[in-house]
Amino acid sequence: MSAFTVVVVRSPEFENGIEVMDSNGKVVGVSQKAGEKAVKETALSRGVLFGTTFFLPPVLMYFVERAKFAKTPHALASVRMFVVTSVLAGMLPVSLSMFPQCGVIKRADLEPEILSSTEETELFYNRGI
Image (cartoon, rainbow, N blue to C red; front, top):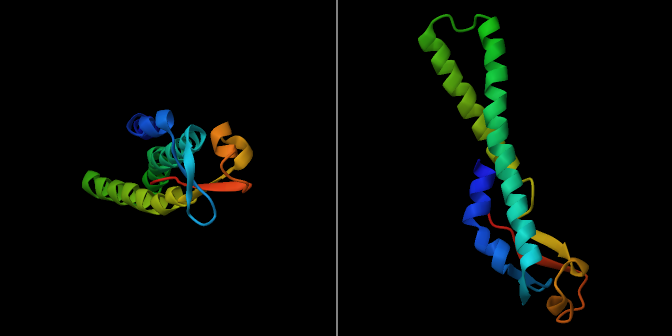
C-alpha cells in the first residue's frame, strides 16, 4: 500500500520527469526515464520497509508466545508493541539506504534530447526520500 501511495503522490515525476545533472551538478535536462527510475526505487524501499514490518512481528510473536515469555494478555500486548516498534525502527535505516539519495543513470538510457546535450556516460538525479 505504501508503495502505491509513493507512485500516486509522485506521479508528476513519472509523467513530467526530473532534472538530471552532470558530475559537476549542472542540470543537463529533465528526464522522464530518470523520474520513473527514482519513483520505482522509492516505492520499492517503502515496500520493503512496511512489508517487513507487516510480516516479521507475527513470526517473532509466535516464538514469544511459545516460550511463554509473557503470561498475561497485558504483558503480551506490551511485548507485541515493543516488537513492532523495534522492527520498524530497525528497518527504517535499511530501507532508506537501499538506494543512494543521488541516483546514477546511464546516458544511453535517457531521452534523445538529453543525449545531445552532454557527452558524459553517467548522469545523476536526486531520488528523493
